[in-house]
Length: 465
Image (cartoon, rainbow, N blue to C red; front, side, top):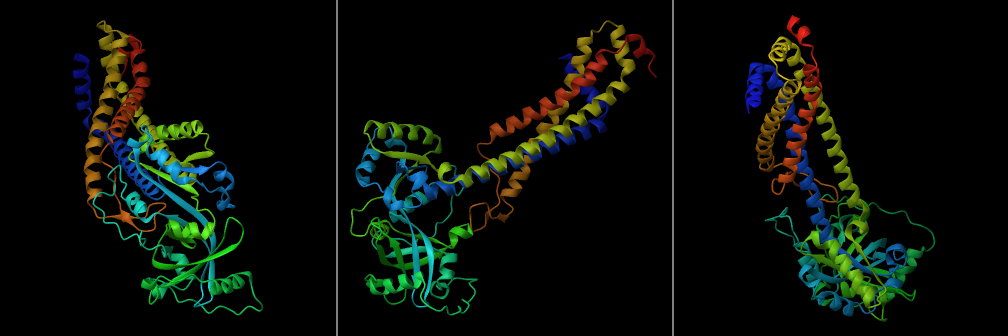
């Protein structure tokens, strides 16, 4: 305890230099804590948005993940309802499950014959009520209090769908959907002869499906053309209820969300209706690994040719974003650690030089080298502890200001700006790690001058001027 008192008095004796050294540690603590909390907010928000759309786990027919993109109809799950019941009624999985829902993924051509325009599309068939329940998932409370817009889909109307903003613009639906910032469609040059798309559009005109009476008058409509599992072209009509941004231009220009049964009819025609995938959304992401193991064991026991993929495999972009933020945090931590290291080394070296006579006197009075070394190490530790503690307090104050400052930004994978916030709950491990890391760096930095002080010859130290 006496060494701590002496160390504290020595820090106070060189108040200006100690303040500058502690300030560097404060800056390091504030930078690491705020960026760590910002990164935690981004990653949890990104995970929440991803799980809302795709769920935690997806079940496909074996081989779909590697080869199904070219022909999703060939990898349909025929007895998907029995598989869903098997999953939902399993006593191990049941407590973890929030939503179990079938999906159909397909590709085709969407046409607007009023302006003779067509474009390839990526379609997702969902059960509207299940999709609405999935959109409410918010395990970390990131979007607590938000008001969700109408999804644009309904269980009671299979003909209604939602398109991406880019697709609506390309197919001339801006005016009908009342989209803002939508430039007028330029007049296309007339091409001689008939193209494959025009032939498909003629086919659509002949085979146009019956329009839902409630949308026959005003709602914009698209004709969707896709190849069935047997290779025959199939045409169905889709009433577009709204257009919404998708966060990526490629997806925005091609995305159509539709009713699950409409997607089934489009992909399988009059054949046996199947599901391309079964999506599982869990209550907690922490249960994802265990749920996947249980699913794989369940399918193996029942000899079902199914495979399980989690959302990080389906969306490699998720891993890239998490890795990017992790690399940035590591880089900042390394820079701050080096700054703190050299600042403390410089300060403690100056202290050793100034107190050389004092060290010689103490050594002449019988104080051991280990005690001299320990005293300077305690001073370095104390500087680190004071700086890191003040840094955590200042970071908490700045975090409150940021969260209440009304700032906005557009995170990766989102189309609309969201409030700029940092995560202040559940970050105790981060704060503890930053505090321990900075204190450890300051203590280690003091080791070099402490050893130099401990090894000073007594006579030379007493003669030092």
